[in-house]
Image (cartoon, rainbow, N blue to C red; front, side, top):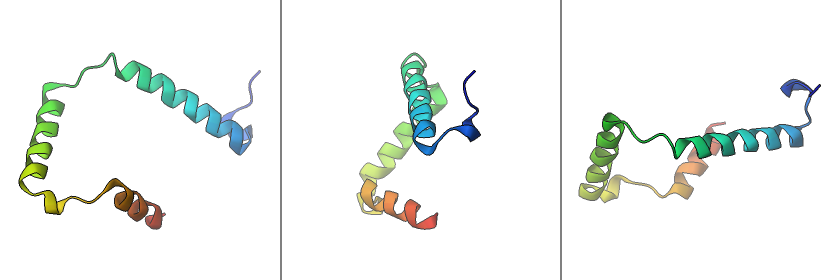
Length: 69
């Protein structure tokens, strides 16, 4: 019997989550975007192209998220 998530070490939890993410990512390739999702992506991309100065690099966004924790 496998240990529950709470009983796992931190390293085991990380491996478990990575495995889960890999499975989700593999399934996502088989799930195309809905028309609404595609339209939202197109809208955001168009907004970015019109106003690139409002965007921030991923590294900056990631650091801002990390500081909130």
